[in-house]
Length: 138
Image 1 (tube, rainbow, N blue to C red):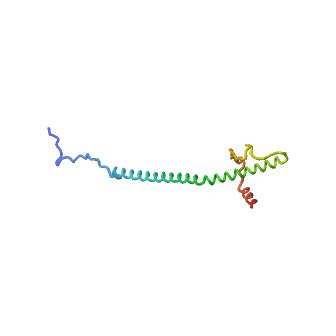
Image 2: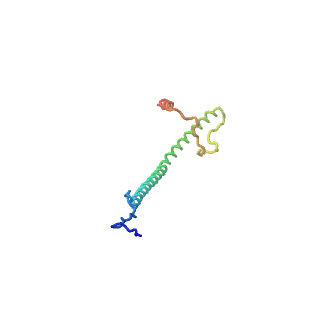
Image 3: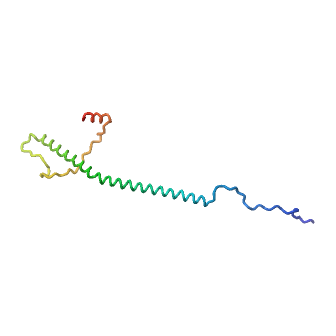
């Protein structure tokens, strides 16, 4: 019996290595790129937080500086309402003898009202009506 032998010159080498085409960068490159993008995002977020903090600080200081002016405006409005109410009371009670107008607290000391007068819900007016009111004042 004849033994089966390899061909003359031997068999071809067996391909055992993977032959995959090159696709993209090495994983380390992607890791570095993602780290850089994340670092930039954190930087921008921090800048936004600083800007928001600065705006809040500015808003607080604006309110602090405007409070005296707004309080003075409210005081002027209170005084105007107070004198208007006294004038209405004087007009209403002009026929009553011995009526002494003034404070309901039996004192000459001014007492700040503890309520706020707000306009009614139907007080919204159109632009045309507002223009007429302004024109009538002139």
